[in-house]
Length: 229
Image (cartoon, rainbow, N blue to C red; front, top):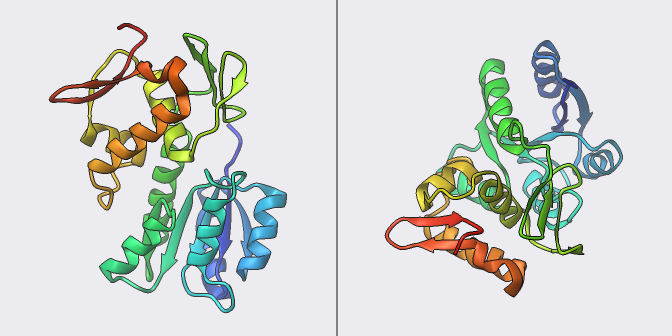
């Protein structure tokens, strides 16, 4: 298996070095940047698998960079872990709302960092989901990260894509909102269950009249994906 590449973005060289040593010992490839501008250029050029992003940096802050990455289609799916000395609850929520996949407060142990990083990467690249899946003319290709319906491209947001990918690889079973949160959002406690309904609605809208019936509401339970009526 190819080693994953992690970009460390922190303006403090000793912290970058400490993290880099821990990641290299855990067999990750490491890139480093000391500001948001350099980081963004490296992300575009080198396409890392994950970004460890410091919250507080001179110039453009980590949170601003996270928002920018999530806005741009080419980087919207890039997993981000925020690094920060701030432990307050509202900052955690702010980081997660900006699109961060996880949040780790300094000081942290290298072991904890590697464990959290592995968990985020595991969620971002589900095992065994590399084959294209087709249902009733709807095709999801995880390698190119594209969805098409009867040969025409279907545009949707990153969360709707993850929902559809989960549904298409777990057909015919009803899932509660809570189960979908765990599977698609990774058990992120800051996301409320009604958020699932919002994204289901967006997903159906993206699929259009031809395929929206595949995402079915199961009364009293939640949702399932099925080609059966």
